[in-house]
Image 1 (tube, rainbow, N blue to C red):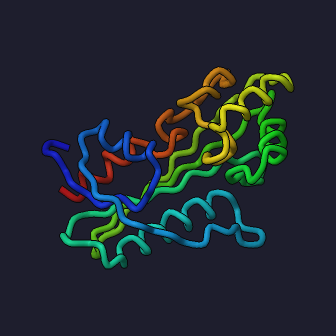
Image 2: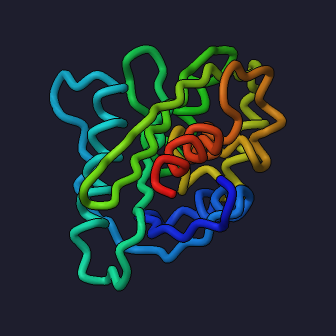
Length: 191
């Protein structure tokens, strides 16, 4: 990306905003509220790609657009086996998720979609994340921070939970919520 690009961002995520700014992309946020329910027998990869596409469609259809500039949408899912872990709904739900992640490898899938109404391009980043074995007190201390409640899988790699991450194989920024390498590659197609 040679010049500063401006896009619409169909997301409220502060992490996605930070990552776009990090790579020199200006943005205007649009609402893209959709039903994020998992369909029966839906594979995690199909789910994350469907949700990101749905956010792009909802954002593009928004009446708030004032210019014909590209729109970026994304979705991130934390997956253990074939189970998609959403955002914890309660303290007990967060403990359950952290127990599933503890001493285990899980996948973080983030699909990014860019559209200008005529052309739509998407890429999905899949990253393996290995959690250390967590003690009950570590989980309770983490939950007490409140950091777990607005994040898929109940944790954010860029915050307090970083201390639990033994290793990752893939895109760090994809785990945060927007794979910047893939996003930059796609945006170059819209310059």
